[in-house]
Image (tube, rainbow, N blue to C red):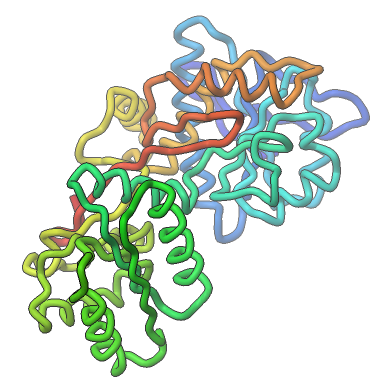
Amino acid sequence: LFAGPPKETGIGVSAATATSGATSVSGRPVVLALPMSGQYAAISSKIVDGARVACNELSSSGKKVSLVVVDTGKPDWAAQIDALPADATIVGGPMRRADYTIAKSKGLTSRRVFLTFLPGLEGGDEGRVAWRFFSSARDQVDSLLQFTSRLGIANYAAFYPQENYGQRMAELFEARAKESGAKNIVSASYDPGNKSGWTVAVNDLLKANKGNAPFKAIFLPDSWKNMDVIVPNFFYYKETRQVLMGTSLWEQGLAGGSFVSGQYYNFAIFPGAWNADQPSSAAQKLQNGLSAAGKPPASFWSGLGYDFARMAARMDVRSGWTPDMVNSQLASASSMNWSVAPINWSRGIAAQKLFMFTPKGKGFE
């Protein structure tokens, strides 16, 4: 377990050792199972920082809790979770698929409620074996379609690279667009390794836009760096009116402050789970708590930990729980004030209503 220094408010990260009996934890346990070492250590630390702020707030309000962090980078991490007391029913994480597979194979998911930080779970696991506390590819697509449908758009195109991610996202987009009532969807692809052929591919796509139901929005599931090559081609062919729709890949590419040419992206959007420009009251409380502790500014990852800890404290899941009980608890507890984009659950299936951003200046807003 990762043992952090106690905070001024008296709530720190509880240390425990896996033994043959239950580990002693003071206060109701709020458990995180995260890789605290290796390439994910920095992200995990931010999640813990956010959860610690939430625990401080809960303690100040009279609700005694204890934050317990299990390092999934340790070989005995599953045994450490097994050794936690019976009232440690809810676990936040894991955030790596391999760790989830371990938790499932060792039977941990039948004894603890795992709210995973994964974009998807195996097969029919979600809402039955474990739960999702993270946005999915479907959440991204649904948020885009909800936004464009409010603009009255019903005809779409998907223009995607011929590789696994692009193909999967394009297929998902087409399926969800049809389910949401789209009238027409045109699909076209391009070879991601042949940039010289992208101009022709764009032209071929636009030729399909000359029919009776021209598309008004284009789904582009590719990295931001490739947009600088692809998007100008639409303007070259005098097509400037479509809404350009990206995925979370755009946010990753723009986070470093890439310069954005306004003439190309005035009608471009992409989804995200953290809104730094218009923080909710919960996000502001998180920021205040992090500032008081001398921590870096609030971000999606600290918001994830903050919201998880508050959600876990709201839920009354005890030994002998069933998936139906957890599903009911999640549906009720999701009404809280979120720091990240709000999540709600229907029969245990999560749906996150993501914020919408547009590329602008040196980044996005």
